[in-house]
Length: 120
Image 1 (cartoon, rainbow, N blue to C red):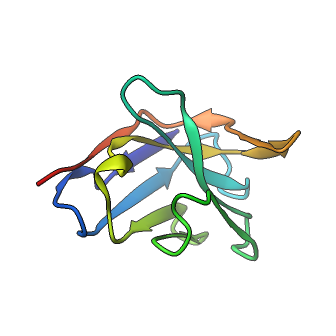
Image 2: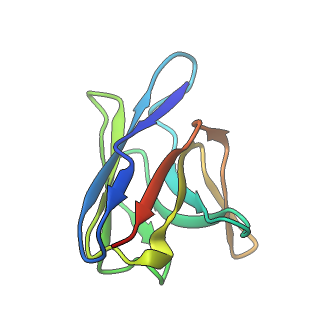
């Protein structure tokens, strides 16, 4: 089971930190990732991290602004979002067992999503 938290309303230029708690049969040793789905758009990859945090991956649109991290001992992983823009508005989903196939990131197990709204 994956449970996201930390979404909300923030002004442009502001920051939010999303967290995903991993429990039950979902292993925290999977590669983990964040995806987002804006209104009227397809779900897209945001960031991913290997099980030990040794490798990080980001979509070009969030590089330099977002940081993914994980705490294996606590079975959580976070997405720190800085310098937020209105175009970052979306439902954000955490995913376990993400894979990179054919030049595209794919989610495995999904959380229920948390809404992030960037607006003045």
